[in-house]
Length: 146
Image (cartoon, rainbow, N blue to C red; front, side, top):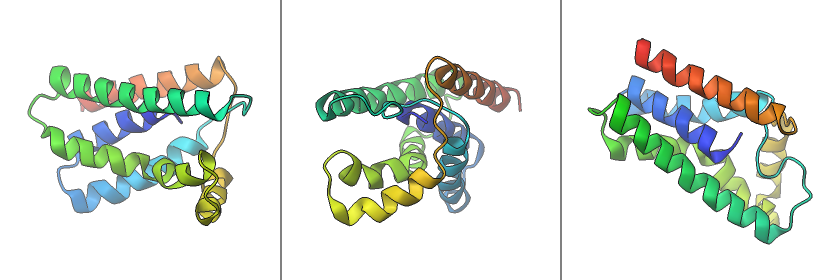
């Protein structure tokens, strides 16, 4: 799943669970569940240069924070933005910890990358994007309604 997708999931977790002792493990588990869902992300096709992948990944992370901020600002304005940021980082943690290997080839992180890759279920565009967007919109709507 994209960093934006994980950020939105982390935002919903932060909005609904005010206790970090529960929210952080749930955010970590959500990463595994979200990656198991068929999805597209920047590395799905593996045909990009490392430079392009880095640019797209940075853009994805920034977009995720902007969308999460907008969700908080418009839908859940009483939620502490710093708390949301921390839960977003937890929800993206597995991607952050595998980036040193995937992007820079640092072999120390290769075992972690292999573990994460084992539960990652990629689906090429456009369906991998459509699936992801639909589930994220539904998740935000459910968070607002309930």
